[in-house]
Image (cartoon, rainbow, N blue to C red):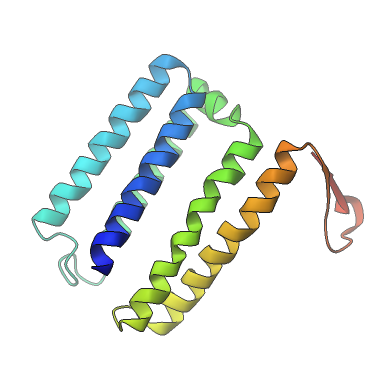
Length: 165
């Protein structure tokens, strides 16, 4: 049951993030972004169906880790090679980018998998609690950014003592 709920949550979060970013892109870039994300999702489902993500299937490096690295390289490649794509992404409002992190409260699934003894403790606890805290902090931070308030750092770091938004 945990697998089904986790899959639904992760798929919904993926669709929310991809769709939200697409809203802020120019129409032709948004179409490419959505097609690319759908294709990427189909590739991942296909790889999972043939067993590419089974532990040990890709040697010592976990298959999902390789998929994550490939996605990051593709995004950095597009960002570095296309000034138009880069400028479109940089134009996305900060409250939107921060607000997308709210879905990270789903890090609770790491802790649930730990409780079910399906993830190891060092990874599950740090990733789970880190994601939960990030998601919870994103809620008031997003609200503050949309209210155009002045955010003050909790410690004085010289010239960066206050961040004006």
